[in-house]
Image 1 (tube, helix red, strand yellow):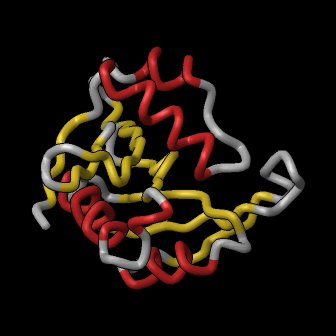
Image 2: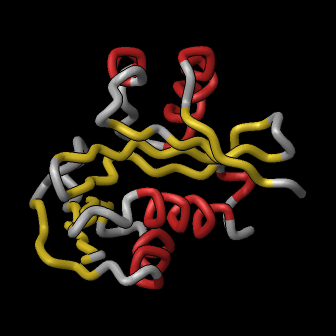
Image 3: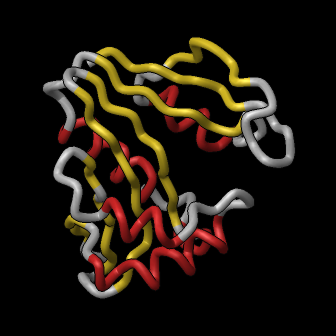
Length: 144
């Protein structure tokens, strides 16, 4: 198993959008990925399996000394194999010059919350009824 990281490319959007709809109840519209993939203040890392298959991706916005993980996904068939930890580690290292790293996560997504906590994220607030099904989002923070 060889893992590599690279920046998301326009050619990846169709595959990413298919994965997005599979993974999330509130999937991002394809236009969001297309419009922002070339924005240099946004990082779009993808994690590749054997250089051929996208097994995860993230969208991270950097504004001054803060970064926000707006989207973080691992393909369901590849979960619980360390890919999420590798992608999160990659993000933390990539944004080590930021003083703060933030994210929102569904309150019910216990596996993701545990992963984020292992990396030093702490719950700092709740966004009530954040998702379209009215589920709350936990706001998590990591000082770097």
